[in-house]
Length: 357
Image (cartoon, rainbow, N blue to C red):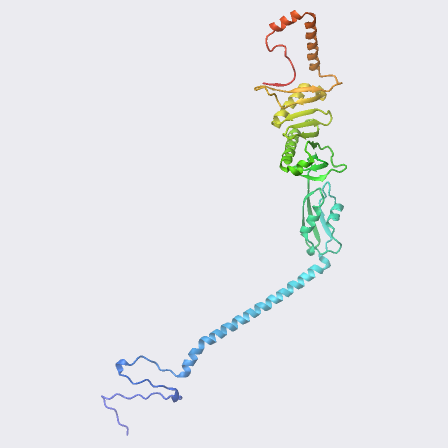
């Protein structure tokens, strides 16, 4: 019979049997108060807990490896697809250059443009160097700039901007000038049309003093623009001296209009007043000094007329009065001298030439 424990006795618990008793370590016996709170676990449990971070790391590396592999596979497949598509596009007859969109300009026709481009039959549109084509088109002296764009699948669109000739420069040779004063083409047969010629600029000045020569060319173009702003006789020549004095020559009448170094608009206003005063006799004008007078407070025009032509009527009247006065002085010098002394100052000077006060 089993003995029942007394009320004062505590039942003794038996430690669980461990199958791997040899791996169990016993903690040294210490007093109850000094015993640490230590949990004793089997060794295989500790080893499994230590292996968990390694397993997690292996799983992560495996996942990333699979992802990178898939991405590389897709990228390689995409690269192969792009290469195959490019090869097909650059060799397919569908993308051969067959069309040309171009609006002919006055000096660059469709035939001339095709000659400048030099695109061989069968050329693939994707293999065309657009900048190279634009540069070849700009080799024509009339072309200021050109642009070439693709219009898939088989057309090239070309836009050309030409130089606008404003005048002809004479400096050792004849050259066409654009609106900026840049010579862009030697003058050829049929190029001048009705353009005026700018003279007075030496050939060496373009090389030795390009800034000074450029200033003289720009002044000539400014005078041309101001002259053409109103309806006036056509010009044949514009001369600019080293001191920037401007002289104009009309085409039909050959009149010489000396604008001088002053303001161009003021000189042209004097010319307009002179033409209004001459009326139908304006074609007889040979030289007109339109640069004003050196007398302070007075502004006048000095003009002369062609020899061999009948002078304007008011000029003939003035000459007749001068001759009559001279004859009177010759006949009776005393009476003529007295008349001059009695005449108030400023009278007897009538003229239809414009005078600016």
